[in-house]
Image (tube, rainbow, N blue to C red):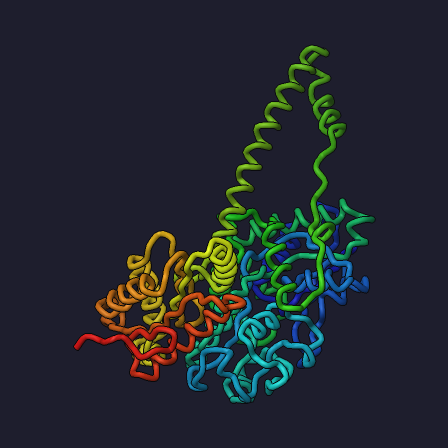
Length: 529
């Protein structure tokens, strides 16, 4: 049976499982003759769109990302067949020499990202990140992305989309210093690559969809067990975008892709409905869709029917045993099946708990991410209103963090951020919530804590970090923090008013010389000599 697969990008290790499945004959064993098509940007703004190709029937299967739920909510009949990457590789890439590290600092710089109006594809992850950053999309100097790093090196663009799996490696190899802005810094943590098809194919040929899914999963398992062989296969059998995609880069990419799939934690292909619901809720909250429905969106391979199981068992037992033995064997088989089912349910529960933990945590520091903070903020705000409890918040920013990166390197800067989380946690109480709010900005939510109590917590954080020295490969680093403190007031209509006052207090501390605490934009507390 001829079957076509439309990729999202050019041929790289990102799609290794499909190449391995074809080379090892897994597709052929399933009765499928698979054509694999690349989906690169041959013309800026006019890449092959897997969703369009699959929905119109020009391709049977495609690879896309969490944009699929956006398409589904807008009435396009797409169905996720398998979740391949548990984490997205998409980042926004700039260079250190351009002098910015946050989306809020873009201004009128020339950029090229996949936002509405410049590209036929939808990038829900890009749109959600820019909306979360509070950027006015109409004011951007944005052009269609070419995904060509030469545009970045030449300054034709100062911000472009890239994949964390290979983009940073390529930039460093070119001799530039990359700066990445992650969607996760703004609370956006979506799935990466997903295998999907159109709903009609699921309804008319579910066995074909299930066979393609199973062969793909086998291919991914083989690719990770035989990385070097798979890299050689890509180099020999599949045309790449340009000569920079060599063996060293593909081997590097393989390890990065493994981190995104997390095959040691999560079964390849597994879809978590709760995480999809969280993504859909974010789309709703940002006004990107009016509603969504997960029913029919996630493909569920049909389990063997009872009749099939009984026939299989009967054919196996008939030559050897009588009716009594058949009954005993059936009972034993059902007992075994029940035990395996319980084990599978427990494994799935553990996997979902692991996924939820990963979805709520900042990948670098292990602190809560912005998405988790916003959930906790809303919950604590409502609880404080109902029970008339106090609620306070501390915003923290690392002083002169760019200088740390410039003088000691980004890896040393990452170590500093991790140490800040470790030291700050030790100064907090069990009920306090610590999260990474942005690049070098953190936030602490203090439930049932009035302003005076919160001041004592903030002072502990300030002193503990001021006294701490971070040992890195680049040498010991000392750092300081600026803190802004605010509390819930009786006339606050939503918790963001409290956050805004904490932000104003933080910038008050910055203006007054850094390394200090300001409270509700009031004069700073006395500092030690």
